[in-house]
Image (tube, rainbow, N blue to C red; front, side, top):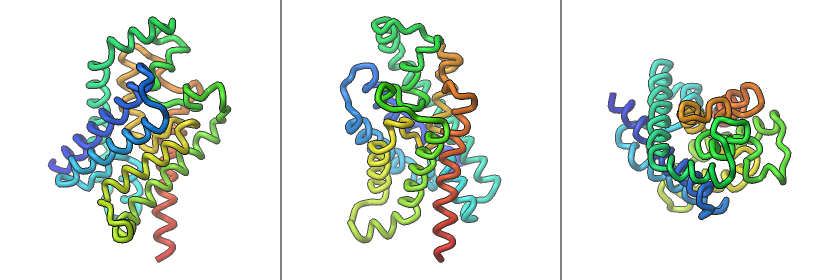
Length: 251
């Protein structure tokens, strides 16, 4: 029960700070890509510090799945962690909706966005994720398969940083949670223009569910059928799994 609560609380904090940062960027234009990346990475660091005394602080179903492949987590524990992470992400999104809903309505009114319509993904993007990033859609074309690749490769490098964090820490003398947060920040800078840079199925799907019931309905999901599943759930799981399999082969 302690580990369940730890994963829940940690993921909730991650979503509140991380998705809250995206909300501030979208609604007020107060942060550019680098600012979002920095604060999102800081949110990951804070979430790990807040929960690691209670649980392994995976805070990410893709990471938990990779550790299950390494036999560091059994099947029952994996589903327990994923359930906690999803609930935590949904609770975090509810908090954000309560805080920002009035500002979101003003933003939608100013930009002639009807919540639930096809174009309302511009405001839903502060919860779930879309490809290409709505802020870069005029500059980039991102196919379904390219989006899967970017989410997968991002999570691949995130998982590598987690697996080698102790070795990295010995070299650069920076605490492990900070290293992981900085890794997330760097990956967001590189990949967010393509897919918003999720690398975490719970961080995406939990807030997406809340957005659906918060009035965005079908607009809470990418236009590509099951894109939320293939890009933002399967992509990160494949990336994290590949990282752990490669590291096992090198032994």
